[in-house]
Each structure stands twice: as C-alpha cells, then as structure tokens.
Length: 272
Image (cartoon, rainbow, N blue to C red):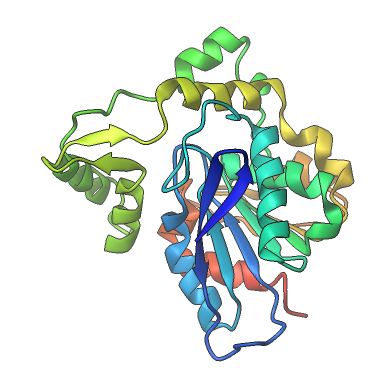
C-alpha cells in the first residue's frame, strides 16, 4: 500500500495481516528500517509477529525501497514527521514502534514528539547513534561514512558477497538486502538512494543526535544492541522506562540475522 505524507511524496508500506486474529484488538507493530535499507528486511520478523496474532506495517522511508524520491526531506526530523502521518493515515492505535539503526534514531524522535501515538518503542541496534562523539569533525565523519560506489556492480556478485559475509542469514534476508538497490534488466545494480541524499541524512544524524529526546520517552522502551549491554548503558540510564536485551556477537542487521529472536523480544512489549 502507499501512504501520502506530503505534497507529491508517497511512502510504500508492507502490511502483514495477523493470523487467526482477524478483527481483533491485538496491538500492531510499525517497523522502520535503517539508512539505505528497505522494509523487506523486516519480512521474517513480520511473519513471526503475524503468526503470534499481531499485524505489522513496515515502512519504506523517503528515497528507500518502493517509496518516492522527492527533492528534499532527507533528514531525521522529516522522517519522524512522515511516520506521524503514516500512523494517523492508517488509523493505528498506539502501535509498538521498532526502528533499526538510523531508523532507531527516527523512531526516538517520533515517539518523543508524539508520545500518545506510541504504545511502546523498540530500538534495534540504533536509537543511540551519536556521531559527534565518534568523530572530531563533520569532515572526518563524512569521509568515514560516505557509502561506496556500487552502481554497475553485478547483482550476482553482491549476492555471493552477502552469502559469504552472512552465512547464517536466510536466502530471503539476502534478497531483501539486495533490494536496497535496483537491479537493471542486464543484472547490474544502481542506487535507490543517491549518495548526496544519503549524506544529507548522515549530516542530520551528526547535527542532531537522539539523546536530547530520551527524557520525553514516557512509554516502555526496549534497547536491543548487537554486542554487549554496556554499549547502551548511558541510553538505558537516560530513558525513563528502559529494558536492555543484548545480542552478544550479533550483526548490525539483527532483524535479518535473528528474526525469530527479534520478534520474540518485540512481543515482550505487548505481553504481561
């Protein structure tokens, strides 16, 4: 489905219907991907949530996946505002909102500004990304985080690279990651999100880290770091109602690597 969030800007939303709970009041989940990613990375998590009786809505943010690529709005604040329109337009009643990587930063800002619209918050290896603390200047940050040139690369080569690098990922997760890019008829890749727009988002992350919003997160918040719980100690301390479920040795894309466990953790936010 498509949701119009601004003049000439429509976002693609992947809706997964709950199994065996049609017409029920089971809480829904809103799933938000990271930078230069797409909603398909949530597919296996969404399937597990549906099997547990919960509908889900995975959003492609601006310039990502099947959503529109407008001329502006490539920053965390606009992405958070777009989510508010999605929730309102779909009539979602206080969904559990989960964001991965930069998507975690986005959902933190959304939840802080619209607390009445969020039942609970899950931050999947994101939501605490503080670029100024890692880089001494914007120039250093931009040099380190500028994405590689991928246009023209063969899709089969990237697919093989992903399989080698992530032997524990399913075939579906590999294909979902490949969908971060377009595959031309000749099997060559091209970017969905242009590098200049990508860097606009990175700049917004550098200028506006999410820590300012933590005191306003009044809902239950689950922090899901890939690695040790100590990585999120300061965030867990600053967020009023935070719980930490750490994934020791986990990939940054936890939802691709361990979808069943991610889904099980998300479900703790709707069960006593």
